[in-house]
Image (cartoon, rainbow, N blue to C red):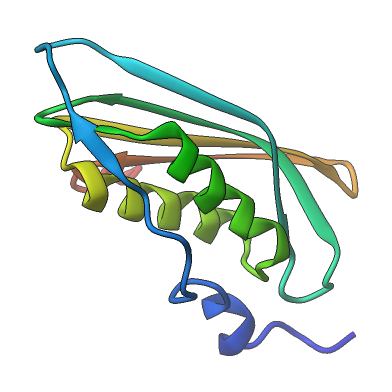
Length: 134
């Protein structure tokens, strides 16, 4: 099997996906947690499925994510070749872009592959990076 290419790394990042709709929030300063226990996408390199749990946590500003449209948006990943690291970040960007929350985080916990379990966490607004040894 040949090495990973730039095409593999960028796969799915700009794919057209269903729109995430929103509705006006009627309250202030509360947290919403959405769990998607059957998230799937396709590895762009091997074409094998990736399975995981996606958890979206956010505090609405003026809008809430509408769950039916979010479900169809997330189901579109089922046939999309995208690394799960990119999927988590794409979900963050699209969800935050749709509702402009006070803060939002997307946590992906993916099933082991080859004995390695991966978790990916992305936050909005994106914090400044903190490096070890700096």
